[in-house]
Length: 423
Image (cartoon, rainbow, N blue to C red):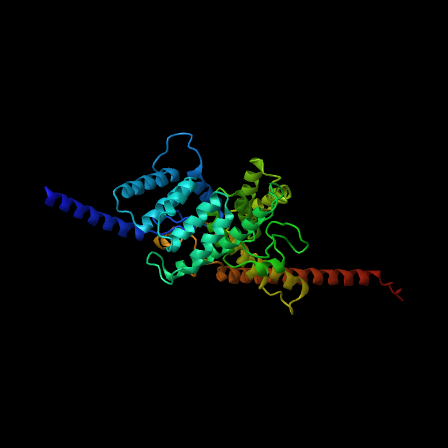
């Protein structure tokens, strides 16, 4: 009997090791860490949908959940890890992942009790502990554990690549700015209305050159303060804390500043409709400006992604106006050449064909594909050819019109001369 029990126990250890390898091979979701969590790919035009999906795990369910629901997946993973804990073979990464499930489900107190019994020297455990205290409203404790985690940050972590390790650390440092600001703010008199943005990016304000909010516009001074990967970092923070409406509001402002007007307008509408018009500074005016901008957005064509559209318009500015051409011919050629943007915009408006390579890339990787075709210069060359042809026809027609005018004037002048009397 005893040997059989020993064999069963060895089989359990083997199965646990296989399970751990599978879990550790899974991608991690930073901030609220759960090594088994898999979030879908989200471009800048899909950020709001991703945040709403993650937020749904913490909301009460009105009906029975189906397996494809995010909350069902999180709850199933929590049940599995709780079973592992009851079996007595419960690693630090298991503890981190289970705490991550509790945080997703809106149960930070359970996460704190679980994490405080774990290894306080592990950076992932400390980060989840900081996030758990932040969810309970104790930003001071969040600062304490966040600082400890950044001090013990490893140079190598087997579950992440070197690029992911650097990226997650950058996001965590930005999160520390938020924790410190909220902790300092909580020491004073509680503020419940007209809240300002969190200084995730120090010194950044979402204003134009005259200091006002304008969709799709930032002053040059603010652009200098805006990191290249700002959307990536702030999106990650919003995914970590999807129920933090103040952070969600700033995400909308940032999306507006980079030209994702429809997402920004939807976020502003959601916040105002939820009764938060007075909660955040300038929100009613921002919503009004975004609604007006949506009219122009629809005219320009929302299928076109703002990034390639911006590069397309920048390329259009490089089309030189002819300096030595005749007035009418030169202007006609320039106008015809500029029409080359039309086929290019039609190409950009086509939805991209999904491929295995794009499906496997990091969902929050900053930047775009190096092989992405933004502008087809053959369209420009073809437009120049037809433009010159049209210009030549116009010039010939204009010359013929002037010749006929001169002939008519000469004939009229000849008739107007007095006739000499005949002898």
